[in-house]
Length: 162
Image (cartoon, rainbow, N blue to C red):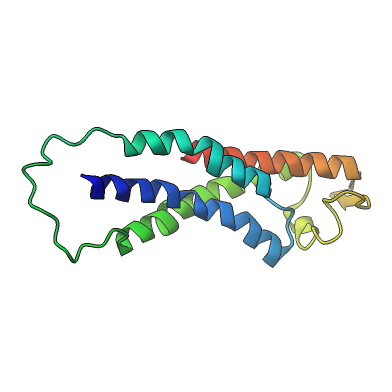
């Protein structure tokens, strides 16, 4: 029983790691504004994840646990199937959802996606010059506000996806 519960807990914990790392990759590789801050990652890992994780670990045992044969010794705790599910399938689906919510904030404010390319090196930070996109001018305060909204959208995507 412990083996099964630990596997479920590992899948739950590993699932949100993928959408936490993608905004950093997108920022470094494509120069888009940062999608999540380190404080938000900590709030997800330490705040919103603890109670459900404990509840999952304390889950009552299944009714047929004593009728099942013992697991083979060669069964590993973290299987390839578990890794593919957590980091590949479910993790990428959640990451795509987070990315769309993140991009929606910029789109709703009238910013073209192509204008975000490599923009984080100059804009989206304190003291940034005015940002121009689609004939609109965005001041430093507007940029920081939009970035905070987009970071919040990414964080909510992770929290609700759990």
